[in-house]
Image 1: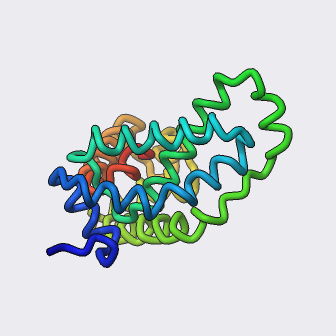
Image 2: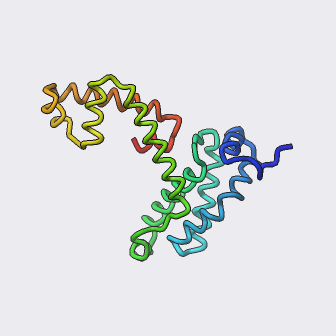
Image 3: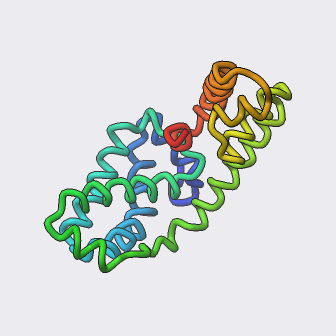
Length: 188
């Protein structure tokens, strides 16, 4: 018999994808309280927070087969952030909420987010290390030095179209490599 309270988030995520309702219940029990506190810290409205968190968990269950999170906590925190952004945009209290929270406190999510960013940087570094020298040079000039395609073309003595083609190829490969991390592939 499986003791769900003893499983890791990764193990629960696998079971969730398989439609295990008890795994979903454990995820809810494990994460709903701090997600609610995080939301309440911003909205200060019990009903809106409860609705937002419930919506996220309904969405999680309905889309369980698609969940590809390397960190369930970060995944859920990101979902709350996006949900709250939509709630705030549609709220009559929008100005009040934004004025009272210029620096939204996200302590509960920072550590996990930092780990996700570190993992992402590592994956990108490995990816760029395996690129052909010219493609790597173009990618790094674009993403690290923030040069335009035209500036890169001038600096390297190649056509702007060549730069565009190289970036298109590199970004497609990068998205493909990061496709397993659905959260990050959205940001690319």
